[in-house]
Length: 185
Image 1 (cartoon, helix red, strand yellow):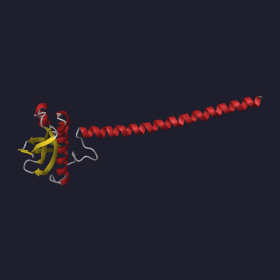
Image 2 (cartoon, one colour):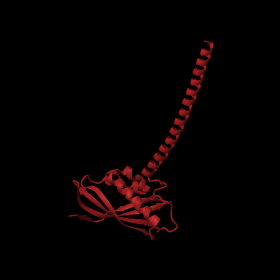
Image 3 (cartoon, rainbow, N blue to C red):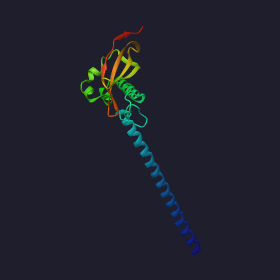
Image 4 (cartoon, rainbow, N blue to C red):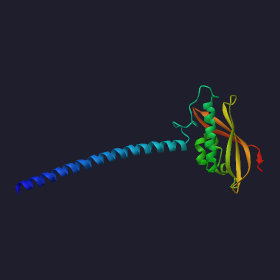
């Protein structure tokens, strides 16, 4: 009977040690995975916030560093990308959404009502038609056809010009010149 109690106590202690060790191991492993996933979430959140704010990211060309040739394809692509981001933000009719793609002076000279425009027609799609570097002005000129919709029907477009400034490697819209209105049929 004494042996029975010794064996029983030994089994209980061994089970407790193995169970406790197993629990500790799984808990440590879960915490390690949790930290790894949280780090990934934090990194993705920073990337999303960077894109929203127009900051540079590893895959973004809208804020590329200055190339040695100001008219390089990289800089032209960066100027075009910031205009696309600006136009995408303009579709939302929120000046705040477009702020990170605008120079401070341009942002301060624009108000919400002017930026949003009238409720009808509304901005539909756009097509970038030309991007060039203007050496005399040290600006990039991006031309885009901006189509307007009325009751979900395309009614016309204007060929607008977007002047883009390179501020220490960050490309920002500096001015918008509205073009002539053309009706679509």
